Image 1: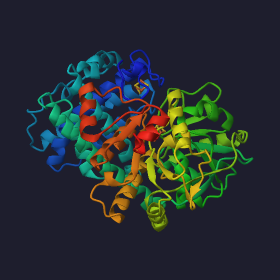
Image 2: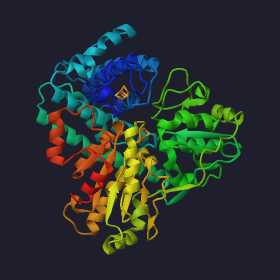
Image 3: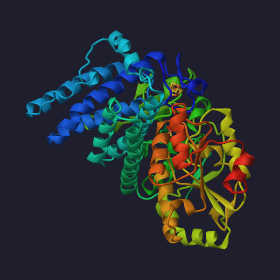
Length: 547
Ligand code: FSO
Ligand code: SF4
């Protein structure tokens, strides 16, 4: 295996024996082969699109396959074996449909469009050819990685959107074009840089689509005090990002005597009007994904993982974890699905009734819900605070949390920022500082949480609004600094989206991606001012322009 897609890549270069995340070598290899066959499907599906054929089945299959390979989403070997078989079958079906429509496909010569096999052994034998180490030129390898990882992150957002029946064929088409282009040896490094930037552009579209899907379906997030304590009822914990799963769980648990709590990235569900109305929706339990090994244990009740980040479960609670959607782990129970695709949580609910109430690990409240509409509603207050100098600078500290000790930097950074600064956050990165008492500025909390990592889109809209209000020509003239923590591939699409929006001087930590070659890193530094982090004092001084 060779995997270098996340921030925790072994030795800062890549995992080669077993993932730091717990992914086994055979699963990593099968994931590479699956991506390869998805590229093969894409060749024919793009032809099918040109011919006006129906392509939705392959569009969604490709998206879901990409999503399943994201860090901490799916560790189940059987799932990938089955998926590769289905992918080969779907590729052949798509090819046939295109040929039947009278289209000549002789120009599609790449092996990914033709390779076929049936057994696990054959799949595994193919892996070295399909993995990143097969690409000799390190810059080409780096750029292809950046593109595919960005597309994987985008796939996650697109899947949440289509679960709410919001789709955009242009996004599907771009994703498939990008996948096929990463097999095209005639593309130069410049072509690949352009494709990387285009990925960011489509990333903005994908995030906007999901924002529309979420807010049209569940209302605009509102300022909310979220309870972090517990009640004395049996309960279900729901984690991940899928709001459609959240909705169905709340509907089905209503009146059963079983409470519902969110974990990690599901916390922002507490901010949506459509969910706030449920009295058995108690609040949020615990912290970011990587603390689940302790928090799932003390929660006592069943846990539903709707997306990443799943940590290989401990024996003490393994029988209480249920997976759904793109998530998987051998031996874990699946949430039942009805023929129409809706979820049936009855087994999880019955399971909860047999369990003790959660153990209280914290008490109190955290405040969030500062997505675009809520911030716009407060715009006058915010603008006055900026004009009067009460707010000197905003710090976008969106992104992910992770288990590396070096991430304590972000807690210290938030704590040591001057009192006249405000943190704008989204994603699970917030758990590094959302329980610190950082106070407020004239009633505006010093940590404004917009929501999940995809809600970084909200932060971009807020920045664009401020630019308009202050009549600036360039988003970079705003008193906003970007100190972003990344972990997995959704952060890659968020980063590329911000670059597309023209944001410069983003600092990325705790380490720069292992998949950036020195030359590609240079392109990012020279054109976008991307930087890493050093230590809290120096970085704060640097951001405040003191050095
Ligand atoms: Fe975190 Fe995991 Fe949202 Fe990621 S829970 S790390 S970027 O999956 O998706 O922020
Ligand atoms: Fe390693 Fe990250 Fe890949 Fe897991 S996802 S195998 S930790 S690089």
